[in-house]
Image (cartoon, rainbow, N blue to C red; front, side):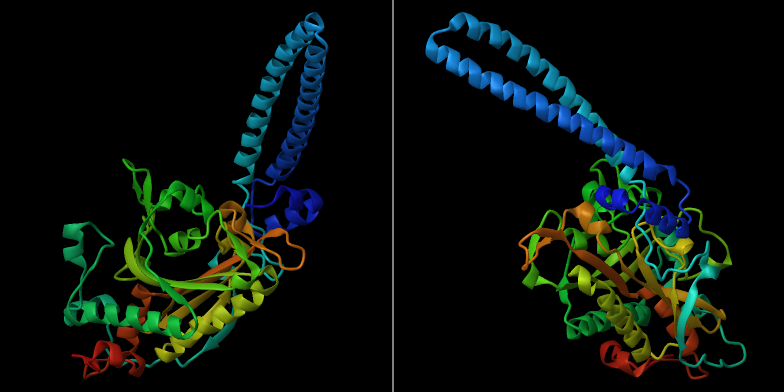
Length: 424
């Protein structure tokens, strides 16, 4: 959530940067400023009334000491009238604060100055491309056919149990999943991340804190009876561990990692591009989350991008890094890098990671602050997160890119985890 003080001091810049995100409700900026003016005026009137009431109360005390009960009673009547007026202004203040809040939560984060203009994925900027695209044998199969041939994943069985988008992993397919999870967690630990095991359901306050609510409410599975949501990513519970917390500056940076299943409704998704593992309602992912000093967040973002790339390199997958354009960014992000791997049998790029800096957008919602060691003031921290990595499309690329006449080769880095070199 943006800070009203920043909007007031930088109105024109805010409007310009929001236009890069193709935000259509720019009128909300002036609406916020008008509501904040009204809030300030109401607060000032309330403060004046409260000061007047306190002065009268003090005067009544003095009169009672002097024994002037008659004059004291007159002032008491005036005090009662003042209390009723104060209540009216308190109600007015609560109303305008709620209206201000309702407008603020509809405004997305401001994009970083390096974010390119654009509307859709085709407008994203390619930062780098690394690795050689494999040349497959004649008659190479897409991963969903390989999964059936080698009895790795049963998509139809998942439909019977839950519905489309909930696959059942079997045999070496299940072991490959577990191997990837353990590999990613071990690599994160080596990189200084502390492993956490959070809940996979969150309350509304948690969803709001990281920006999923109200923006992506329709994409989250809601447990209506309990008012809980299945998590779309471990980012939500892990970042919310620090909601309403004031950290010491020396505690920064905080680096956490977590493996969780993730749940996304993906409403409206259909067509050939969602076949097999390309888009699921339930999938596994290892997430990395950092809470850092504002002066370090963009250095940390670059380091997180390099770290995710190192995982793809160890898995021997050709990949590219994209800087997302304004129209393709999330509601809460200030700058996002997407990592995509080459899916050889499908001849297309598949997104496997997003690494984002949210600056103070999430921390303002979370009331996540740190005490500055220089001036002793509480300041908003910066939050970042990244997929390291999401499994389904990694598995798809591994199966497709490594198929041979002998079978499917397992990358060397994974063999200690799978304990087999081939799927045959």
